[in-house]
Structure formats: structure tokens, C-alpha cells
Image 1 (cartoon, rainbow, N blue to C red):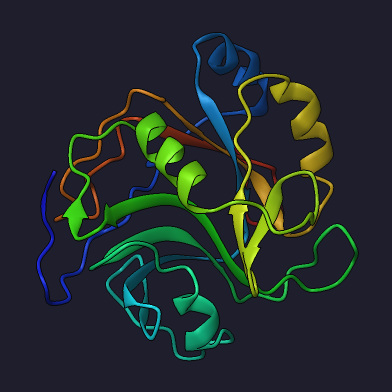
Image 2 (image 1 turned 120 degrees about the horizontal axis):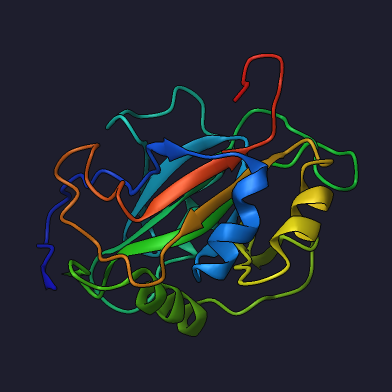
Length: 212
């Protein structure tokens, strides 16, 4: 870990570059990967200096033209002291959830900075354990995410039964499939978009615009 600093500095989010097919799910399950639901939104990096200072940016170092979430809702995710930086899916595409209604919010799936420390060299499992300690469910939503604040959620992690979970999740509009992550995959510094691609891959359901 190293100091993140007192001023804002962009970090590119970990994202998978490799893709695979649903037929490979059992193989990755046997290899010990963790499966996280992949939502159909925009990958976002949430920079929190305090509960009143929140900045949401996209994976290309971009800002969003229209934000549907309040600074108060996003700021409620700040924990500890100094900067916290979270990675999640900003749901801004009006995709429908399990209840048939458009799902709007920010869904956390990783943490990059906590208490002003950039978590370089921490493993994916260590960062998930940290998220467990920071964000408790405040209710229930569906089988794949749970609420942690106003319009904010966290994805559930799956370590077994990949096939059956896949068959259920792909029938819900807002879910695209899975991102599979090695629990021992270590966080790189995030200076480039290509950082942190080696320890994860995506498996998406086929659509008109996405085929294997």
C-alpha cells in the first residue's frame, strides 16, 4: 500500500480484457475463481474524500453527462478518514431488474483506496473482506446484489453453483452475466487502462450485438 494523497488523483478501474463462454463456467469454478454479477451500466470510479465530497467518473477518465444519483447518496458510502475510492457499476441505462422496473443506482464491486491508502499489492479476496467489514446489508433486493445505502448496492460473490446461478441471472434484463476473478489476483497501480486485466475475465450472455 502507499499514500493516495490529500488531493484527487484518477485511478483506472480493474476491468477484464479476456472473455470466455458459459460452457467454461465449471472449469473456472473448479479453479477457485470468484464470480461477480456483471450489470449493464457504465463502469464508474467513485472518489470520496468525505461524506460531502463525492466525485463519480467513468472508466475512460471521463465525467458523466447526466448523473441520476445525488452527492448525498454517493457520499453516504464514505468510510474511515481521508480518501476512499470504490469501483462499481453506475446504472444509467434504464435496464430492468428482477421486478420489471428500471434499476437505478451505483453497485460496488471493488475498493482501491481506503483511509487514504492505495491498496496496491492487496489481493482481490483481501479487498472483498475489507468491503465486508465496511458495508453491511441494510435490507434485501434480489439474489445477486444487496442494498448498502440510498440507491447504492453491493454485488454478491459466488464461489460455487456457477451453472445454476448463470441460468437464473441471464433472464434478468439488467444482468449481462459474470465477471470471474482470481481471489489471489493482486492490485496493480491503475495508471493505465490495461492494468489489472490478468486476474479476471468476463462471460456475457449473447445478444444481438454480442456473440461468441
